[in-house]
Amino acid sequence: MNITNISLAYIFFGISIIAFVFFLYYKFLVINTGTKSKRRDKIIGSMKDPDNWRHRNNIMAFISLFWAFISQAAFIYLKFFNKSGLISIIYVFVYLAVIVLSVSLFLKKNKLVGSK
Image (cartoon, rainbow, N blue to C red; front, top):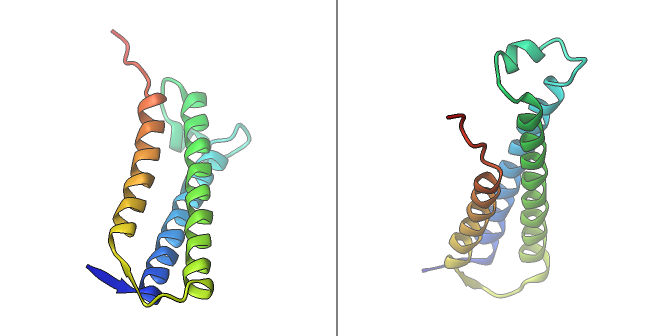
């Protein structure tokens, strides 16, 4: 299945917006759970390891920011520099699979082992 160059560009633009929203979400979690924050107790509660949780959320924020920049670069390239008419939609699915794979590998690598 093929889609137009402009449609694919705006799909990447949408992905960049979603990734940037995730960046803001994770960053606000990290900021609002800082030592000087008034909301720290509401968010953390009785969490066992809040420092590790904050560290993982901070890394997730930067992974999201990385994919937002990559998606924005793909949008700019497809919108302004690529002049082909039709492009296969498989590229979008491969791109989304790489994003999901990078996030899942990070989460799997940093998964906490439950206490026995």
